[in-house]
Length: 583
Image (tube, helix red, strand yellow):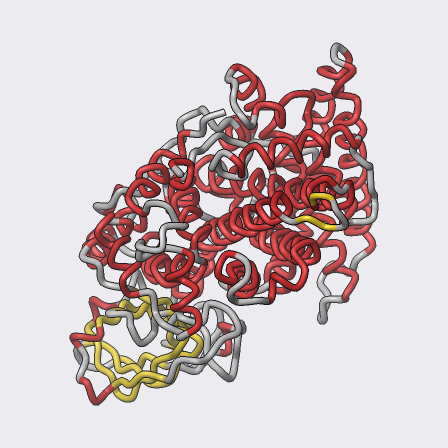
């Protein structure tokens, strides 16, 4: 099945060319050399600038080309599948600008949009060395002056802090702090007195070695009143709403890394001989590849629905984004680790297998689960939403069925984004969770006329039972705990699995007819509920309620995977030709 969100991705592929071409500035070999030297990918970023990738960082309403967030995810996925470092280095500008999209006046947002379109890298200065992810403890201050503000303090572990031309800074504007004690400022370095700010040295990192992970220190830096984004005191709110978008967009990094790792491992298995046989002929190797592919399809399905939910279920992104940011990076980390066992020692060697790309992608991807709130931060965010999710379930609150349909029907156009509809709380709960019983009933009705769907029906029923168990566990937890118990995080993990399962079930239900109407390499995945059965198998096993999928389904997944990799197509639920297909 073709997916419209790949249109820009295909155009970018045409510009970037085959990553196996050593003459390309964005080849696998060139990226490996940069990694060896801890070198910033300047030349590659220049190519992306020439493509005007930055237009996808600016919403159309503010003068850019970002119309559908799903397009931005799939386009950045193409960058990440070549090199996560480049995706992190270039894509950081969206993160730096996002506070303007959600909290600024139109005039301010258009001004920031012009900065982004000009090619100016913008960084997002949130964290500090002494406080980590605890934004309420931030010590950088913005003190009122006669004409604006004075910035003092240091931000640390900031992507592009040194190379960026502008920095979006979260600073304390009320000495007492608190939720309304912080504001965000767009600080253009060129307008500052050079003596009032200095770079904090780049930190050497295990992965993304070439990225500019550094910091910036302010000492009496004076900025204008018009550098304040929105109103004073809404900085934390703007950041938290912005994180709902950036956490969802981070899935592009994981999907690209997963594409890369799967491609390397599948090609390795096809060419490696062991004990007189091809590695790909061994059942254990085939099953490991198929299982990894199932994990990847799970991550892709959750990412597709999550990115479409930005526009289709905007008011529910506080819960959707936390689930996406928890599930997709962790599942991808596990998948890559599993494939490392297949590739073996060659995954650790620089010059033996594809310029050491497997080891590099595994190192690089580990940072994704830390970006924009680490795994525990996202799980804690879900814990904070337990009372709302439980209350809406107990009250049988009606789900937003139109929003679900729009989020899960990839052929349906999305309504224009309304950033003002982002909310810190999903006041009506989670539509995907509330609609799960009806979705299971729909699968059961389809299975009544098609016995091939029996495995999917079993898995869907198990998912519904698992969600009932999550609600029961929520009722046993303290309503307002002083310290969040470990049990709450376990329940949050199970909740994330249930919501992810509910979302992918909706994707199959709403898109299957269109998918089966076309014929392509991915078609067998949609037939007989193969991919959702496999995805639910992987999800439910992770929360202790396994419903093993038929071996025939894993065989189908293996066949599709090898066909996609062998023909230069993306490892995906959808049919997308890559630049290397021209070899």
